[in-house]
Length: 409
Image 1: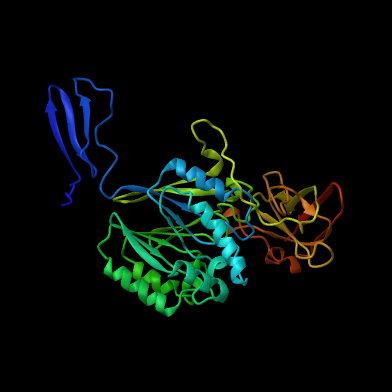
Image 2 (image 1 turned 60 degrees about the horizontal axis):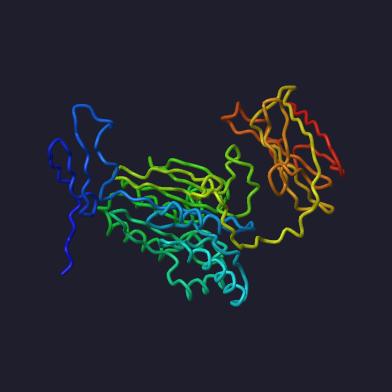
């Protein structure tokens, strides 16, 4: 017969020593010599039945980069969470024959099977947005939305590409989610994981998110998503929503200032809610500080054009506009379809990024847009926010270039 272990502390004083018998889910004893003065702040141990740690990885694909996700697996193993959750875009996927999809899933499974803890799959558009990829997921992994409960926390996993080819939640999934929430009304906390930030599209009114949010209203919950490859936070209904950056997916990786970085989220679930830490991959090393070699080819970069340096400045009525975003885009010539962006510094200067951090811009003819958030000192005239209407343009030549943009009321 299995014995039920009751998570409780029993404290005895034995000869001036505090003996704490038990602990969370164990029969262990903790001994601490208690004297008149003691080198400890207190003995309220930071543990409880409902407390645990798990990790969340973000987008791996959409133009994945070599040896990022595979390194994340090695580093998560060093951290030893209870389990790992994802927010989708695990393979490049798309409209491909089964043998191509099978090869991509085999590669991905080869990485997550090295984790020493469970990994929970969450579907992204690269994984299930086409009929081909959705069927392959169904045959391989079964349901595309599901839930589980761990230590009185409900995990609600949603599919934001339901049905395939659309962005949103299908009626059947919405009805299922409402029932799951109703059936688990007494949990301590609810974690929602999905790929798309559906609330950004018409406040979720037409894609099903609004109905899910109504069912979540009044309970304690946190939402995690990905898709955009840039970190962002919202507060809705008094609850926190997080859009994660990348764990190997396409990114210019310009750093924390630009909210573009590779990371996993370390979540400590406590009775009063989750405590989050963003762990940048470069910050985790093993005890020997030796790097672990992994094999993970990235997406091809063969079609990338050569980039050139640009020294840029932008002024509005003769004054720098720090925080503005400058966007160069081309609709003709060899650079057609190219977009490069830069953020304006306090002195009016900006650096452009096309493929990777501050790499410059390919030669060609470009139209330019400049935008400034309202909380950065007030909006610019609307015409500047659209390249087609701004009348701003530049020709980029091989070598060093300089562009000075003078904006007027």
